[in-house]
Image 1 (cartoon, rainbow, N blue to C red):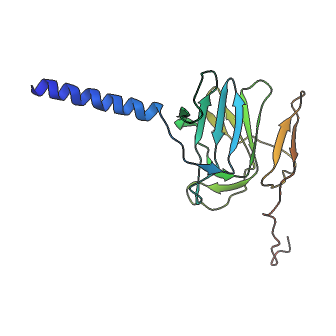
Image 2: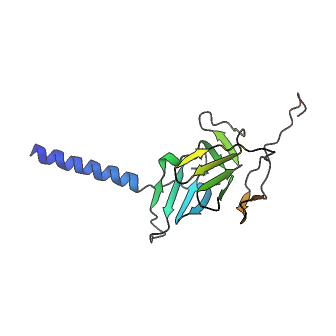
Image 3: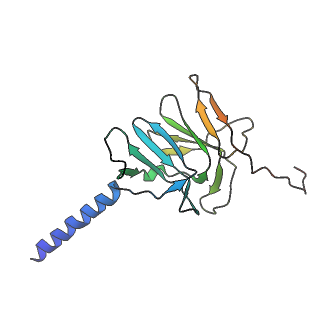
Length: 173
């Protein structure tokens, strides 16, 4: 009897564990980003619960039929962003291998303080790794903009606002 009880308990925990991994229910959010790569709608970052910034990367598999009232979201744990960001733009490379995350309000994940030292991040879709590319030239700090890529691979940024520029009255910069 004890063996049967332990077996049922073990099966329950396995089902519970698998269900919690496969059936992720994301919080509502705004100022997030989204792209479509290879039949997946990826959504990342944004503000959850009106006060909490997110670094999550989730996706919806578009190759399977789904019910709009009960979406089957998946969390990519290793895909978490290296920063908190909202109001940025995201663009997919021509070969669907890389996501470019550009600008927005970026905050350090350890301190939750705004950090604009890196304004562009790339996500390698095949390895689920975020990196900071080495970019030359001036990159404007912009929030709430839209980006696109043309057939030759040039990224264009449209609109947005710049609210992070400040005047340091001591150094006059």
